[in-house]
Image (cartoon, rainbow, N blue to C red; front, top):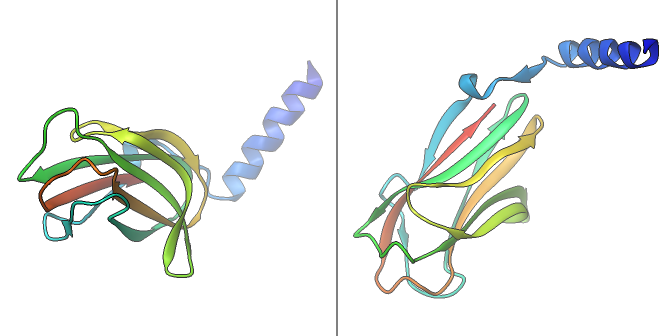
Length: 137
């Protein structure tokens, strides 16, 4: 019993010293693409964007806008990773992400540099503008 209490106190003190964990309700919302970048049809066509996480907490990524739009069965790869040599080296991604639903939700991230990406899985038929929304600490 006391061992568990000691571990809990240690973790609490350590997190407090590091700035603690950010509650998802206090996350920063960033948008990328902003309806200006154009994802062209073709397997592997993609965009990636860097962002910085300032504290430990949860990450959520969603494709929030697509224009001119696609059928509800059209999916994309959306995920996040580490910027590396001009690209985004994936940590986690969803190959069946759709418009209006979180592609990634609740992943734990720590302070550091990350990137978010979107990629066509070969299902779009016309160029699409898009907006990705990233919620992070």
